[in-house]
Every structure is written in C-alpha cells, then in structure tokens.
Length: 491
Image 1 (tube, rainbow, N blue to C red):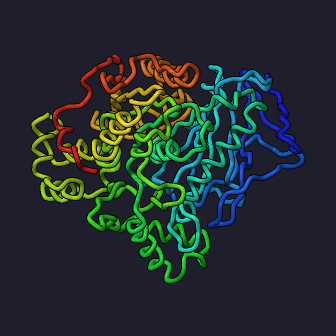
Image 2 (cartoon, rainbow, N blue to C red; image 1 turned 180 degrees about the vertical axis):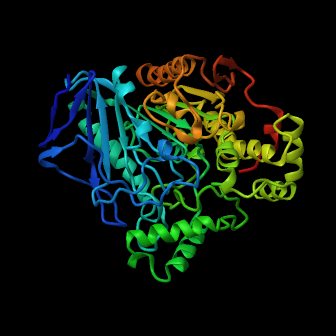
Image 3 (cartoon, rainbow, N blue to C red; image 1 turned 30 degrees about the vertical axis):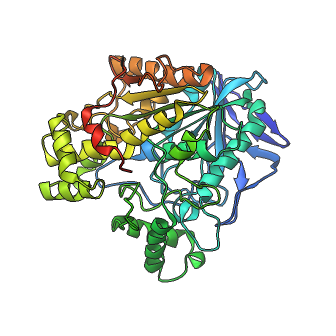
C-alpha cells in the first residue's frame, strides 16, 4: 500500500511518498545563494511537492564513449535555479530520536548529485536510520577561486546543509545530536575538510570513503585554474553564464593544467583541476594537521580506501586514457615523488604490479587515497573519540577481473542498492553472494552510525588495526606494506 505523507517544516508542508515502510521527501531547499555568494538559510512556505528529485548543480556530462557512469555520478545537469536541496528517507515521522546519516556525493568537485539512484536511502531507513543526501555547488561556481568572492562556496553549502539537517532532523524522526556525515571521493575529501571546520557539536561521527585530509590547494595552485578558465572564456568569470563556466572548466580539465607550483605537488594528482582551497578564512591548514591538533577530538571517525582505486581510470576508462608506457610511468611518478625510480622499484618488489599500468595504478592509489587515509587515522587516533580504519578489497569481475576493488566499487554495497540500480562500469550485479555481502557491508555503516563501533578493534597509536572488507573479511594489526615507507615525508 502506498500513501502520500505530509511533514510540517515551519510554515511549509512537504508532500512526500510512503512505500514498503519507508517515507521519502526529495528536492527540499535547504539554502539559497547568489552565484558566487555565501549560502543563506531559507524559510519555506505553503505546500511543496517533495515526491521527486529536482535540479542539480551545473555540470558537464560524465559520460564517456561506451562507458556508463550514471550509477556513480547521476544524470548530469538537470537545470533549475534552486538546486541546493536535500533528499530524506526515514522509517518514521514520529520524533523517535533515530540516528541520522548525511551523505556527501563525489564527482571530482565538478559533477554528481545527491539524487543519484545509487544513493537511494531505502536500506538505511529500513534499518532505523534517517538518511539524507545533499546537493552543493560544483565546479567554478562551487570551488573556483574568484577574486573578490568568498572561497570554498561548495564546502560552505555542505555546512549549511548539515545545519539544516540538525534544525529539522526531529521532523523526520531523527536525533539532531546524532548526525554522521559520510562521503565518497570528493565527498570524502569534503568530509575530512568538515572535520577541521564544522561547528563544534554539529557532527557526532564521520566516515571517509576514499578521501584524505591533505588535498587542499594553495591559493597559487587555485590561481592556475582560475587563469586557465578565464583564458578559455575569453573574458571575466563573473560575466560568464553557467553553461559557459561548465564548458570552460571542461576544456581546462581536458588539458590537465599543471598545479605543481611553488615547489608543491598537485594534491589532486590531476584527477580534478579544482577543489577546496587553503583560503586563510574557512581553511587555515591541511585538515590532517587540524585533526592532529584536536579539531575533531570529539568526532568518531571511520576512514578507509579501496585496494585498487586507480583501476577505475586506468582500466575502466582505458580507451579514454593514453596508454601507460615505461616513460609515462616515470613521468607520472616524478610528479608525485622526488625519487620516482625508488618508488617504482619498491612497488615492483612488493608485488604490486608487473606492467607500467599496474604499477601506476598501485602507486596512484596509495598517493591519492591510501596514504592520506592512513595519515588521517594516525592524526585522529590520539584523541578521545574512536578511530577505525578499513580497506575495501572486494574485486569486481569486470574487464576480466582487472577492474578489481576500484574507486567507487563499495558504493552499491554500502547503500545496498545493487539489486535496484545498474552500476554500469563497476560490473556489480545482484547474485546470492553479492546480495549477502552487501548486507554485511551495509550493516557495518549502520552499526557505526548507530553505536559508534563498526565491529573491529580501534586504530590506536599502540595498535594499527585495520579491517579488510571482502568476501572473507579479516582484521590485521600490520596494515601497511614496506612499500609505503617511500612516502614518509612526502605530501
């Protein structure tokens, strides 16, 4: 039986849906902002239809020839003015004080939406969690460094969304003091940034899925992209419309601008030309340093990455990427480390690959995701709140098994949506085995949000505990191979 429930938010009434014991409300405006201004709270009035998803942030298509990415990043740009919105799934509309989880989507800070079908919150609601997904400004509008305008607008949108969730959680059955923020990829990097800057008490727990706390651009690095976008536009950024900004950034991204300036390496490894910036206002230092100083001392943290992150790009998007020759491997690693030969030798000796492509995938996975995640765990572990590490090891059978535990492959299992969504490139299909595994993975995320304990020993300064999440999950106190030593002192 399906009915259409109502929720009161101040002067507004939201019309949602109810099916199979789960209530959902979509396209709820949490803030509005001038194009390059700060987000401002809104007061909603009257009856509002919250039965279907609405506009998304301006963005380019994430489609590649012959590659289906929609299950990961959504349908692309759905035009409309009010896209700073939230979607909510809940098992009850009574004020029952349920744990709340807020998901921040990925997409290289240039694409994605909380309305992506793969982020459907039905399974979380079924298990007693209020699940919220959010949109935030992307690309130049969200993260472009524009003279005279506030920086990190997309990150400020995320803070506004969390404040909206806190203020309205009880209307959806949630506890405003029990919020877990979690995100993947750019969303995970955002979560790590939020550990450093979110108002005290706003977040109780956090989960970083393939992120890290050392990916902020310096003003000089951000200025490289600003200059390139301005050149592509042929005029000032502030005078360009949304489509022109999207087109210009897409062109700049395809040219892979060199953000290694002032003797610094590109912390985003060329995967995006744009992202959060060390602005001296909201963000004063790399989040890992703020966390080490105690910025998130009261926030429980679950942090991890996938074993073969870079295979998404080097295997899944292989036809869209140049081949990795020995020369290309040396050139790429030289952008990440002052002694590239030492790095390649260490990873080859550790059995991390034979071909240049395999070695680059392993090295890039550690530089961008593995090492930053480990460093964040180490920075957080001495403080009062709990710290847990994981590595997702389940290998996709796609591309004759070469895709492996690639970037994003955990998402169908975390949201337990693999039987309802086509994840395309990931090669994840619903079988008895994968459905059972999805239940196990999903339960870890629910247990952490509900109890503050995912089910294995904490990572502490004395015990370097890590859970390898796979078909046969195991826990180890020696998580990092000898090859990781090459990154000591390198950021």
